Length: 176
Image (tube, rainbow, N blue to C red):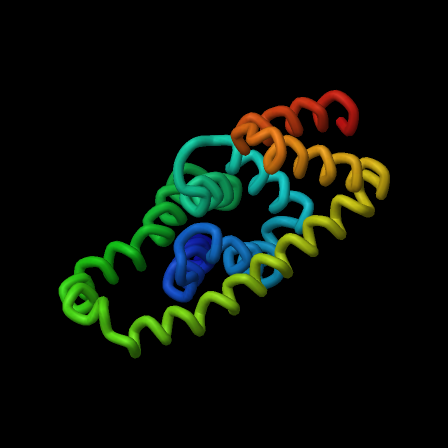
């Protein structure tokens, strides 16, 4: 039964997560934290941070890790398959249809209406992570790291992976 739950926990976000990995992260969080209770918000945040430090699609890295944590090697395989299956099925079945109607005003309007929903989901996810950080590491550390992150990413244009690795080291030294 656990493998079926793992499959559903990653297949459903893959089906409704329009826009790829970043848009499905809040949906995966809802499944693994709220619905099944496999992780806490803090644990999910740590997996997300670590996954962002590694190369490749974020949704598959999260799925592989959580699947392994919940169901071992086979659970990891099930989670990975469930994550990529919706895209694979959609590409095979709908690619021709999409290419035929890609310039349609109706298709463009549909995608325009979906974007704000994805933005709201990402804002809610960011708020929950800030809230968790605020209480777990304290307001000073949270504000300091947020400002430092902004400067490093936006002003100095340092690659996000390097910033994440730096924060992992900082957390290991000062917050561990």
